[in-house]
Length: 409
Image (cartoon, helix red, strand yellow):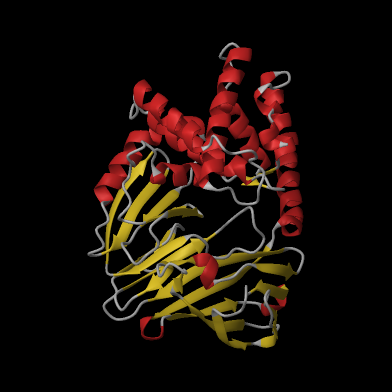
C-alpha cells in the first residue's frame, strides 16, 4: 500500500508541476523563395503566435541588400551605415516579408555569394540577418526553414537536419533567436555523401563547376580519426560546397559548413590544406578578442598542418621544410597583436604555437600538449592574449618562456 501511495502521489505531483516547467512552444517558419531573374530571394518569417514576441531588432548592415519590407504589425526602418529594422508583430499569426540580394561581389571581380539561372550559392546569415529577440517569458520558438525553388532546380543543401523535401529544422541551443546560418546551395547540383563517425558529410556543387567531390571525401576520411581524437564535439551534419571562378578563389567556414573554391588544390605545394584548415576553424569555434586574432587563426593553420601530419600525410622531412618556410616568411614580424593578421603574422603565429607545444611536452614530460590548450580555449570560446597565456601556463604548471616574447605584448 505504501509503495502504491508514493507512486500515486509522485504522478499527481508531476501532473501539477509539469505545466510550470514546460515552455510554451511557438512555431517560427522561414520561407525562402529563390528568384534568379532578379538575383534575389523573397524571405518570409511567420510567427504562429505573434504575441509571443515583443520585438525583433534586425542588424541590416549598410541596408543595401534588403528591400520591400512588409509586416503584420509595426515595422520601423532605421537607415544608416549600421541600418536596423525593428519588427513588433501583431498578436495573432504574423508575418514579415522582404527581399534580399543574393550575389555579392568583391573588388577583385569575384563573388562571395552568387546566383545564376541554374544555381545559387549563399549564406543563411544573409537570408535572415542577425537580430535581438525580445520575447515573452516561458516561450520557446520552434524554427523551421523551407525553400521554394525555381522551375528546373532539383535540390537544396544546408547544414541543418532535413525534415522533408526542401525543408529543414533550425535549432541552435547557443542562441535565443534560431535563424538559418551557414553555407547553402540550391539548383542543379551534384553531390556525394558519407558518414564519418557521428557526422553525416555532404559534398555538393553545381554541375559543371569542376568540384572534385570524391577527392574531398577521401581527404576527409583520411584525417577524420585525428579530428575525432582532437576535438571533443562533433557536428551531426557537415556540408561542404564549392564552385569555380568567378567565385572567390579561397575557402571559408561557417556554421557546420565550408566553402571551398573548386580550383583550389586540396593540399598545396607547401603541404598545407585549405580544407583541413577550415575544418579546424569550424570545429574549434574560437574567437580571438582584443587584437588577438592570431590565436584563432594560428590554431586553425597549426592544426591544418598537424592533423595531416598525424594522419600520416606528411613526412618528418616535409614537416621540417614547411617549418623552415614559415620561419622565412615571418622573420620580419615584430608583433602578432592585431584585429586581422596578415600572412606573415599567421606564419609567425604557427611557429610560436609549434614552439609552445614543444615547451609544454618537455615541461610536463609528454603528459600534456598544445591540444590541452586548444580544448581549454574552446571551452572559453572568446579568448584574448592575456587569457591565452594564463591558460597555457596552467597547462604547463608554471611560467612559459615561449610566451614571454614581445611578439604578443
